[in-house]
Length: 250
Ligand SMILES: [Zn+2]
Image 1: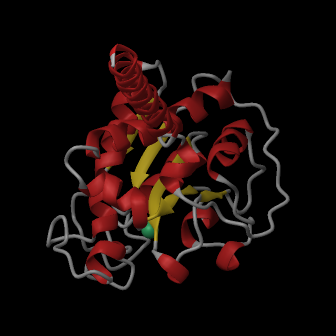
Image 2 (image 1 turned 180 degrees about the vertical axis):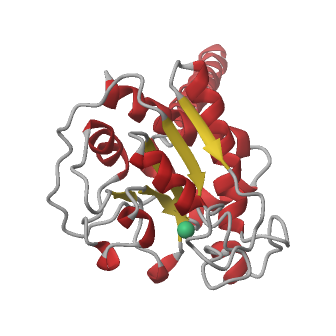
């Protein structure tokens, strides 16, 4: 009888220990899930052969543009995202596409974090959300083009369309320029698009890089929409991008 009680006690103790260890293991795996690739989803698998080897001055001025900030209500408003378009959820802000909503949030955070880390970094927001003419001097592309012509590094951030409408994450390098070490550093984290992607888009033709962060779908979009994980997700993305800049200029 005494032995039986002892056995039950031992077994109970074993179960408690097993539970604790399994919980620790589970938590560890949750942290691993913060790995960039798991957060942003698949990167583009289009064939791209470019390599960025040109050196970059460590004080290079960097300009962050939020994709579609001047083209709301036009054909180029950006993706509404899977949550809104496929599952019928409310947009984050009914005045703008969900993509622009997140582009603006991330733009602000990248600049804030970048400054803290010593980068010569700034942002531009046209403020006016509908500018019909892409060559209007107030558009992202006009400001970005001037910035790049003066030797700066201009990059427009985007979230890609969901499902088969999108391609995935990656950097589209400038059309006429030799890719540099920042381009290389970003591409190593996010993937790389061919230079001639879609015939050379409007931004890359103006020496503006495009960074597709990831498709606005699945766990990335859920983590952004969920108030409990939003800030952590935005921080993680901003941190990865700022780190890529730092890796490229040092
Ligand atoms: Zn976009």
